[in-house]
Length: 84
Image (tube, rainbow, N blue to C red):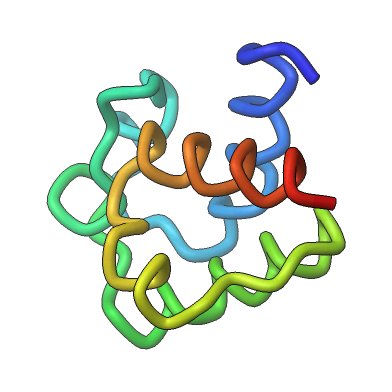
């Protein structure tokens, strides 16, 4: 999966939870889920569960804590997909 395909999938997953439309339109690897998109911590858990379902992976608690940005999410997803 290319970087752009992964970002597109993540964009679809986080869209229902965002609070900042302008930041969402400019979503990139550098986008922070909490600070930029204003996703609260409860919704961030929903994002992680949706990522698990979409990619058929299991994200451990240690990884969940790190998954606060698009780049971190991409790294974790790629790592989990490689392990499969």
